[in-house]
Length: 161
Length: 289
Image 1 (cartoon, each protein chain N blue to C red):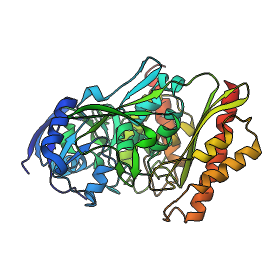
Image 2: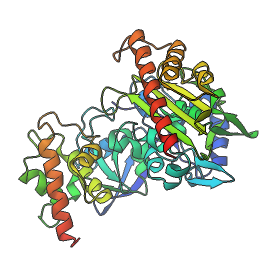
Image 3: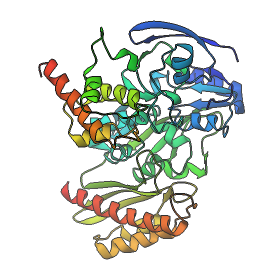
Image 4: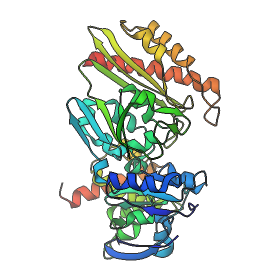
């Protein structure tokens, strides 16, 4: 099948690529664009390792076609830090030991980034529900919940809430 | 896992999508949220030559009220249903059930219309649609026709939708005073389909049950309406003995397939328990209104 030309915003910059219609967004990001932060886990939309922010919403990029991103805005874990300063969600996962092997972490971070915009003052229960599309096989989630709370506190403080 | 090759079409209007569907015929599939179709394509359970993506058709999105009916565009996502103040007030069973579907990321993509039109008995909306007396708008080259939810689901992945038609809108009567509702779903973990689930919507008048709908998820090749159970409660003051009797009648219509979620007896038993819980909760809510 003929490749299609697509243009979209990736982490604030504009990217233009040629993709087959069957190419999944995660493969376009990792293989065509070299942005390997987002991981491929289950490939069946269960684990959340491939989560990216697409047009202001968290999606699993193993179950979105790259052609569907045409004209859209994508944010991946590579776009979270600014000028060498970690985003509060990244700082939270570091401070609270929210990771062990780190495989699920890019998806956790980009989901936490969006979740805290949807709910800036979450309870622990809210975090567990809001992050329920991301699986971690190491930490047991306690520290992930703490990491997201850390980020929530920091974001509220810096935004002068 | 990557799907097989296909041509991709992204029409901007319903008319254009219907025209494409007519031209491409059996080789085309409609792409809604994609969280059922794309996994099936990766596994080669489906190998369409053409995908017609409905995501760029703005007219298929949105929730509005018109003359006592709630009109919902078929491409409205699960999270949009959950966030709708209009639905919480006028059709509260729908957002309550949507919260139990999969996880936040999937609910950002998954759509009401896709969940219905896929014809999968594991999906939650078919039973919910039966419980709220929904009407589906099917649009094709010959115009549009309306069909009630009870008559839409014919079998496993087999619905009333003709190959050249698109489910464009779902219409649901706004609830009246004295209405109670509940969706009780047993699932093993986040993201799993129901082992069994029951959708109940009922209306009380002076303590008497004037109307009740009971529908079941994932215990037969399609969602099921438990008609005998409904009849056993209609016109009665519902008590625990009647609830038990209704649950038994609901279990009698179950015909589940055995899988990792359990054998036929277990699933049937759980459908009975979900029915009991849903009737009790709906009753409590109706009394609170």
